[in-house]
Image: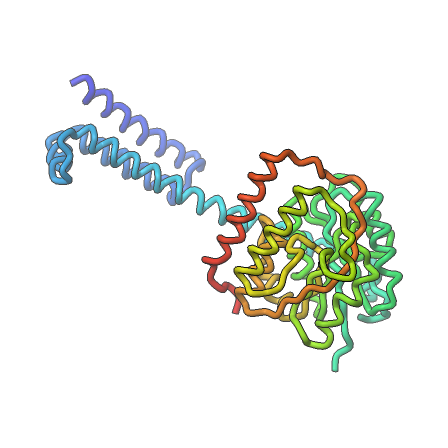
Length: 127
Length: 237
């Protein structure tokens, strides 16, 4: 019984935390929704534990705890993979942005300094 | 016929003392060229030195690595309509008197990209540490095997590119180990690549005392990065 209270408490705590973070704009819907669904699922299994036992048995797990560990490990493996993808994407965007800023800044300087184009770096009057 | 426009791309990160000399050397060549120094988030006066020496300067807001810096040069070349680009490192290691020989095969439309090699006759006197040479030769064999190009100096950053290659690299240029990897990208897009013998100066303040284990790790990383290019799909038209 204690374990039920403990896990129920954990699921509710995560739910409240995520909702609160969303309220404070620290989490956007895109990233919050997964955690909300996960905590609701945890809560569901916690209240209707027969559901957990049956699902575990359905997938061939003798011990429901093994089922939980297995699912969680899978979940975290995929989560970290997706986070890596996201990180790469952000990294690329960051670099692209830096390049754009650099080019734009050079262009602005070029326009500001004097009207005739290509004032420096060029050995022709109008390359 | 539009007149030929050559862009010399000089990536530079904290190269005060070297960059101005490099720019002046390039500008003293009798070619219709523009020097673009891409200041890769330097903390010193690299950008100012380069500007005073007569270069166009693009300053990146923070350091993104030599691959990203050189790619910025390709993007500039596209925007300003350059038909030829040459990459020259900002540390003064490259002897710019070879620029003309580097762009010659491209002008004649024999190839799309040239790489200045230190290991082709008649200039084979380049000296560097034993470990470094082993590494370079290993990557040379690996890349030659994978691409079918005859490559002897895959880590050389002294290169020239025609408009076709510039267009591709402006969009897709490797950021991790750009020199060897970009040869793989050129292969992916079926571009013609050729090496040209050049001489390079010995780097005055280099980091030649790399530890063996670190070298081994570095070689493994670069090898996997090169091999990783084999699974890439084309991204640019």
